[in-house]
Image (cartoon, rainbow, N blue to C red; front, top):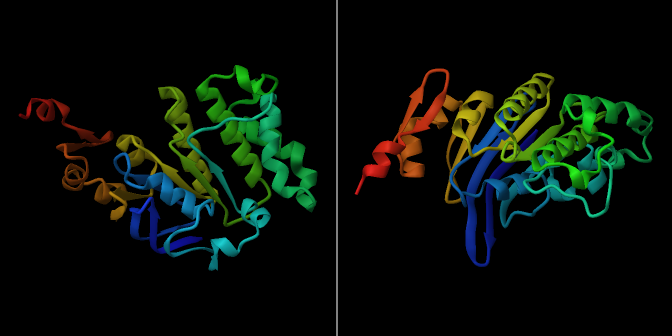
Length: 260
């Protein structure tokens, strides 16, 4: 659905991404993993069409992302960024309704109420609908904005993409698990899901494929058992790792803390 070929990006004369090629496919969860500063968020923004790359190309359905009209692009992919907020006092339901803006002027506008209600239910935030956005906790806001993204994709047809940057960062354990299960269900319906995760155990649980980045370069891209191999993780993070069945990769911090 979305293909990146030789993606490079520079900021302040410094390369943040170098020669990255990968593809986001319908019906899969692709996780971007790697240390801080590896280029994960930058790559997500380029694949979402929010930033232009300095080198290479990024295409949606064969068409360069920069050639898509913003409205048409918004009807094919939705983005949930790291920092979510609204500039004006709004109820949570009104925030979710913002997701329907790309559909104004189209026949899908008739689905607005249904789409908003379905998104609130899917993200398990229907009970927050009458609350003021400013009164919500960080985790509640994250889930409300997830509902906004889901409402945006209602009526998009397939293939369509949902892109999330560290969506579990402000969630408790229960809501993290619920979100990861939701991403698996969405992929099962044919949605292409791209998600940045720092927690490697979460990545191992939810991903069909993991793209492991280091210093702006793609080190591995494949099934979790390959891309999250302990030898690769030790190279990237500078820590020994062990894969535990049913749990995933864990860093061996005790040994690392006693070194030197």
